[in-house]
Image (cartoon, rainbow, N blue to C red; front, side):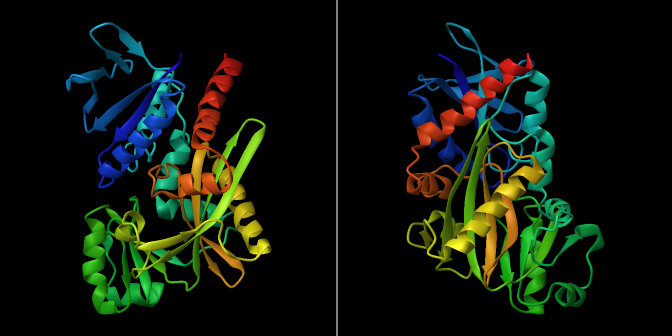
Amino acid sequence: MRTIAIAAGGDSSEFEISVKSAREVEKILSAFYEVYVIMIRGTDWYWEDPKGRYLKIDKNDFTLSTDNARIRFDAVFVAIHGTPGENGLLQGYLDMMKIPYTNCSTFCSALTFNKQACKLYLKGYGIPMAKNILVRKDSLPAYSEIAELAGLPCFVKPNDSGSSFGVSKVKTAGELPAAIEMAFRESNEVMIESFMKGREVACGVVKVKGKSVILPVTEIISKNEFFDYEAKYTPGKSDEITPADMPAEITEKIQELSSEIYDILGCKGIVRVDFIVVGERPFFLEINTVPGMTEESLIPKQAKAAGIDLSSLYSMVIEDLFANNKENR
């Protein structure tokens, strides 16, 4: 039986969500593999054994020593939202250790986690998106200038954060200082994005050798001002309709664009692409290369709507790693 490490935790505000995702993945993968949830927080990397002991990971080779054995992992299922699992840091380490992992490469992860860099990259390929500007603490323009450039209302977002931590919808120039200050608590860079009135949707994509799975589109209808942290993780705070109730031609556009973005960026594993649909045209919002895997998350709901059980989805990604490694030897 192959041995799989599920990397969980991380160093961002998404720590608890990551742990929850990892535990859900563990339940499913344990039927097929020997699974260890490896907690990563700062320099503390460990596995909690059945006796409640924290056994340290040897970072020299990413191995785990138990009472009975020294465990070498065949692959890593990355379930860390935010740093270091979503921004390329963990991927770079695993590349050096020559251990395969389930999500995007070091470069792709770093690019996609930086919202502004990702948008600039995709813009060069003609992907439609809202107007946005980037501000930094040491070069912050006047708030009146920001309001003029981005327009009002607008969204203020940390440039490298997830789960809507630090995100605000700003309606007046007077709200900008507090919104930008809150975003800076999550990131050293803040993106201000023009508001587009439309329907928010998301589409999951997974591609392995010889097979592409474009999942059904979900429409997200938040009962809050926007799809914030509370709306994402509190039952009843949003309606997530899967498959989305929209014309087939619009659904096809969203799925085709999701697949195109996956290929342009060189993604790997399971990703989720978010859009705002204005009229009949989808505009790119962002891509999530380590999407949530909790019961409240969109990917499990989309897989269910497509008639795909999660064990098949996860195993497909993991087994593809082993097939590729065998070919590359």
